[in-house]
Image 1 (cartoon, one colour):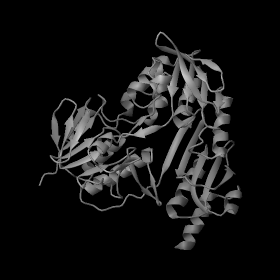
Image 2 (cartoon, one colour):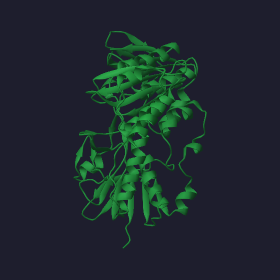
Image 3 (cartoon, one colour):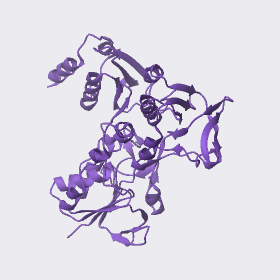
Length: 412
């Protein structure tokens, strides 16, 4: 019996589901629906190399449209789904047309949080950073000697700050918390990243909130801050986190928490509907999580593809992330939520450091700053369940790769 698959969302996860099915020889009809007018592409380089102008957009495409045609994947681009009719097993597009499905996959991603219009969020010159259109608009703004105000000291804000400074702009970054990266990293990592930004001329206003944006004839010209100061700016970038695009799932009656709830096979509360990527919430080590990463987008999507083909392979995340800022490459392995202790280790190269996270004595994550060996070693330890004693990490002359080899050899 033919099993028609509809994928809502044409990003990393949506592409990964379709590509995995075709790679394993599955020939069912696939329709992929995306709100943008371009084929699926890599998002991380958008806010880095693409924004700077180092790469052409075409190099970010996962595949050109010929590949989709040859693999009998119908791309329905520039379209949005308004409703899931679970009873009739079809999706309803904004133009009223219906597409039937036997299996449905939601890879709807997440959207940046915006500022309310009451404080100027709808002014001209205020930008979010998520898709090609956002970055095309920002490229026109990024000119030397101009000034940009960035609201939010998370990864999006910091990466935007690094790009703007590299292009010769004045950058002022405002963070409501007491330090940058407060929600996602230890103070040791924050201090290292902050120092790199200060050395490159970024101006920080931490422990400071935005009162309102200031405008002239509908265009932003600056901001009033909670410390009473006013800052002039040619444009503003908002980087205050994202929210899962779970509206469709919620409206159709699927189980939704902080994202679309899925089990270890990527299945929602409806056995005909799956979900993967930034839009999902699932159980990981005893807690409900939502992972915003390429790793999760791809690995969870491939689990969904296996499930659709009738396989029963549990999704067991091995989280990893990365962020490029100036000449600093931050690579993260593991998931540091709930840590109660950190340990800083110097790498073998100048400027290389790593921050190791522990929870009740158990190693759970590592931040590697310009230290790929620490990243690879930490990731390997996590996958093998190795719990390195503090004495091992404190011995900076000890080769971690050799240490892992000795542990695995003794366990064999």
